[in-house]
Image (tube, rainbow, N blue to C red; front, side, top):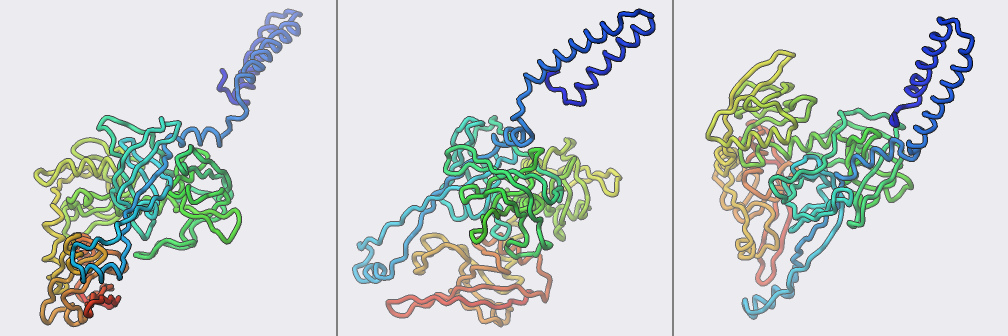
Length: 482
């Protein structure tokens, strides 16, 4: 009975009391007042004992924190930074390879994250792990405090969301946070910001939801103040990537920033935007297999949010809005599990899917394709006339570049859109439509969505050796896709 609420306790008191009074009245006994008083006294004694076992400090805030804190982690990163020294480059050209350049240095940073899948997937801010050469994750003390190496699965600079995977044993399981429903937030409701800054233990701050997202999503544009949830719960830099939760212990946002020019103003990425980012970055394409449909979590299964043309998903008859409920005859428990089940099938077998459309259950089959069969250098050349090559560290050093980011223009076809734009061999393409490109597959995927005649914004880095000196010029132009 220790867990009874006040209302339940009153019912427990009132029912026996009423029954005792009725029995005494029906029997005509004159001692019913004495019996009633005795019954009331016993029940009051039981109630006092129950109240003594309840801890008034364990309110909804404490219960929510206890529920989620085991899923909150500390994230540490190491980034190797090669400091460019033009003087050292001149000395190396004069003295030859025997002259040693300044060695690279390491930069370290800390942030927070939250486990979203029991198999060890961690959600955090993209800026916490971007360009990191090494990532390690420390669990909270409530979860044992163990430290794991982690790998960056994917990230999005526009949404500032990244997904990590703990390098844990195959049978290890972790406490995961539960997502709140999209837009299930109310202005003024109590919210809790959690984090694990500096690896010193869990950090908790409480406030109210001060403002919701103020504008609809804008494609290929970074999130800003207008897109974030606002709260007066304290969010410090070390809490970046930690969860913002409601009093049910559900994730409603991902802590992202603190407004330095104001007091008591913190921000978080809404869970709806987080789910959209995960649908983009954690798709079957991560395993270098192409399904061609983006999905989002649903109550029972996953909802299709986009279907790419002529993809395996499109050939299977899937459409936007379909609710996929089963993979290979097994119910779907989450979109990560859905993706892993698809990837486990590879491209050598048909996959049976069950889905609902307008409340009607349907079945279909599909077969995944290797990404490189579709998104490759040939597709880029066919659409733009460019022959692109990925940069290796050795190639970058030979060309006198200090970075391996971007794609080298190895050739330009005559009478092609690339030639019309004036792109020359030896240039470096570092962005398409505002998105950095570092590999052929990602560049081809972006161009795949473009129809003939559409334009794509190209950002170039022109490498111009001038004697012993090297100059770089950044140019941008619109390339019409054919």
